[in-house]
Length: 246
Image (cartoon, rainbow, N blue to C red; front, side, top):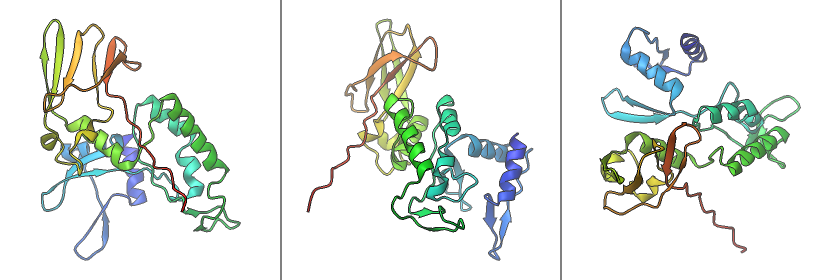
């Protein structure tokens, strides 16, 4: 399955490099090469991919999902189909959708044009309603690209220590300036939605930030991992400023 996916990507010319003579050359990844295999596994299974530029500089890149269609309003219903959203929930995954709602192909000849009123077609409206219902139930989190990438980075890179006793487990987070050098916003806002999975019989859990301050947390049975509890900070939604009349 992985080899077929790689072959498909090569055919789509989505993975290539620019040669010195400015010609595009599709990369031929040898599957026996451990590093290159690890790269492909990351590209197909992770939103964030750690890699290095040609000059050796470390890079963190992220993937956007477009699908086999052009990124315009008329394809949104296919990108955010019920099957795709079901899979996202079942796998507890994350995705960044690549879209241009200002462009549509809902034309007589299927050509691309600027979106006019109504901007969203019937399939797009249905997809947004499905997303809104899942979000209201807490099954799907909807946020901006920057906040999602910060959360995924934090889950992967944040350092912490655990001090265990029979009465209490204390989790101390390391400084965000050290753990989040990848972020443009190394602040407490990055702790939005932070969570830990612990055994259900674990004693009291206390989480301290790098300054020794206790974080406000909730604890309940983990719906995904039987026999475990989730200790988490409630995800704070964006606060939208209502437009003011001129």
